[in-house]
Image (cartoon, rainbow, N blue to C red; front, side, top):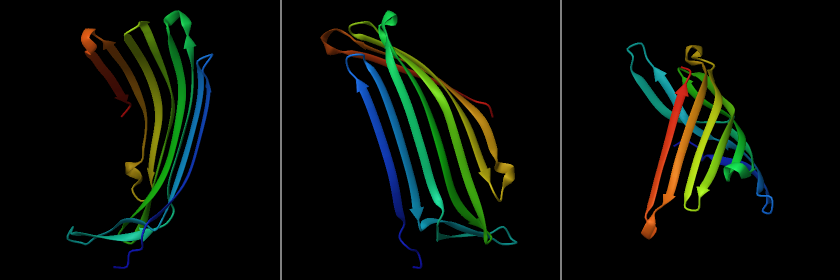
Length: 177
């Protein structure tokens, strides 16, 4: 009964620059969300290992993300290449036996994608990305994690006779931990 309602304050920005005659595109995205009175868990663990949890309000919780992407034609491959990069930063809180545990996560990394149209009704794409990730905990430093994540993907979209379609996607992810 003592909980207050959560309020999310959001700031967003988008920029799209498109050159249809040159087939070049530049996209930028930014999002920041701050939560007032975030409802989170307050865990109490007694000497017998019994855990009691109750919801409480906290402040200082946020989530910030951005991405930038540039694409241009690659004429000799009959397609386009896209270069992009993203970054995310988040902070949340939890309580364990009256002590606050601040949890911060950060990730960022580039990616590349090539889309090709070798025939009128065939689209083939391939991409790769690398992302640096870090999570830190003020109370449980043993849980702190830093790792790299690689992602490789490919797809085929093919329009067959009589408006039948064949489509397949492949994604392979490698984490350093």
